[in-house]
Image (cartoon, rainbow, N blue to C red):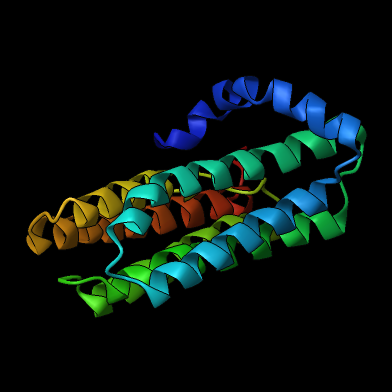
Length: 205
């Protein structure tokens, strides 16, 4: 697996252990967390789309992305801890992740100085990267999380982009960052498809 922030997930999960215990006592279900993360993304994405000139909204986006990442981690942790790992949960997890990505990242196209076509292409590439990760399962492999631009990496990149926008940095820096995300997303698609094909490779005698 190429390097990705995803590899830090075990440490991040350790920090969430107290919250996991509290959620368990409250009777919260994994699917509720999954849907909650998507709802948060839709609401905040709508706010950004309505008020793309709001500096406060852009400054706060990294915190929203961090909260979404925490909810995404907690739903899997809770499912494992309570034995509630279901096919419905797996489907919701994949679908809600893609909806959340689109909701939070497409509003960047409305920001002053941003290249709207580039934003849309980056979001499409992100969706294809996750689709490539799921395709690995169709060949008998595990779900592919290869980097270098997975879900967590995108969250960091777009969080930085939001700070650049809020700080009034020259658009060239923001669009340059988007271009880098696009190139790394294409590499991620390649890496994940390559992993998906490995189970199909003939074995040497």
